[in-house]
Image 1 (cartoon, rainbow, N blue to C red):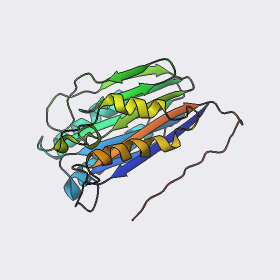
Image 2 (image 1 turned 90 degrees about the vertical axis):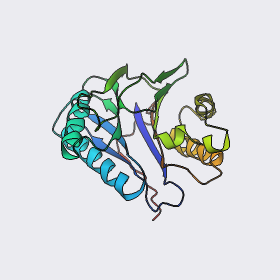
Image 3 (image 1 turned 45 degrees about the vertical axis):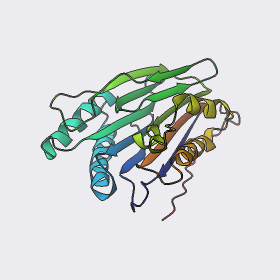
Image 4 (image 1 turned 30 degrees about the horizontal axis):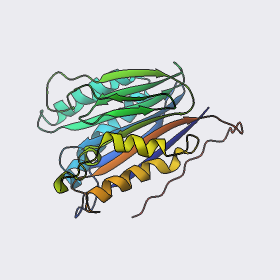
Length: 234
């Protein structure tokens, strides 16, 4: 199999930088994790919070901590550092080759979605964000690795897109966009979802927007080279 990861981002309209942070890290026991944090507010202050959260998560994953333990430890770190006065979301999507599974760790008010040829699953059980409350732990879901699956995570700027104009984004629309995307070619999917959200906000996003797509496809050509492709306008 081949893992394909795409990230598409856009800052809030009129703000110079996004308060969302997303990074990809290799797991010491094999595999990859995508970490997405949405800091409270927007702009520089939110970016500082989300950077703290993601960098701490990267460090813990690199030390071999399991994702559930990472979520709890990052919460404790932020709660202690900022005295329970700021919050952040934290989603971790991991391809764990040690267990041959996808592990989804979620502390967010937005869902994580699974879409494959047979079904759509929306992981949206209510859970606290990190930083505010003294006792917080993530919701963990684990799915066995198989090809032709797509996992989607996004910040709340996507979920709330269009509500200022009475046309808030629907999860059913996101599912339809996914189903119209080739199963073996998820590279353009994150950008298509982001573009849809931007259209609903009249191309003036009312919050920071980030979309993460993690896809599993057949490694038809038995490729052994790992590739990263980045496009980062500055």
